[in-house]
Image (tube, rainbow, N blue to C red; front, side):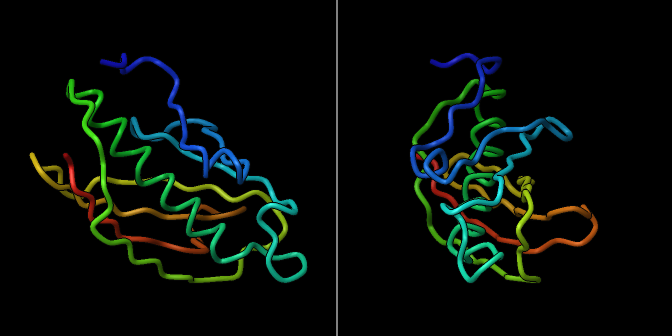
Length: 133
């Protein structure tokens, strides 16, 4: 079983977008992605899919971190993910963090928020329901 102190390894999709772990808040990893061609949609703006990818990666990272801390390392499968786009992502780094709202034996609910320069002004949010196998 992986050690909870090992650095969090992000999935290949997150790495391909350039998403990295940049710190932690309340024990949960904070993820970031810089602006560039891999995440650009319309000129000088984040693509909605890249924003959703950042939210999804942050949600899974939060859940994975909590499960490892509890001595569990199960496989995670999405039940559903709902994304709300709140503002256009501009050509600057974006950040995201997940917060576990319910953690059971077989499923979990995670709320995720993404922002850019101002933590109090999110650009997107998501709610994830995840099956724990």
